Image (cartoon, rainbow, N blue to C red):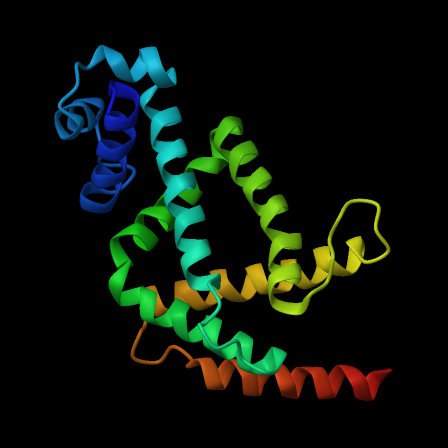
Length: 194
């Protein structure tokens, strides 16, 4: 493994152990067993490296919680409940990463680069969620592109909100079944308005 890969692994470790705001360049270099100057050489700045490490970690986390079960659930509702259950389970197994991810979002307010990276990741995730969970093609220019974006956006809001509730108040955070029941009630209300 070269310095670039070692720095990425070291940055990911530091994010989980120290958090975004408390990780220094020296921390990353020490964790990577690499010279301090290699951070700027390979990534341009500590922030760029931390942002890349955070995005890579979040993408892996997203793939893990979206991963279908060996026996696919027969209905959309069952697939969604299974995904939410995996998200809830990850609040314990991946808590340091999720705390670091929440912390890194605040950096977007002051860093156009971070904001752009996160925005690109969100934009790519929306149609992917719609396709994976509902079979809605989000290909640009397709008839379902707007629907895929809308459906994916709702899922992203649910995932973010669920994660925040479980990080802040796990004792009172909703279960996967409660989320499903709430969405069903909301859908009935929306249908009655139509």
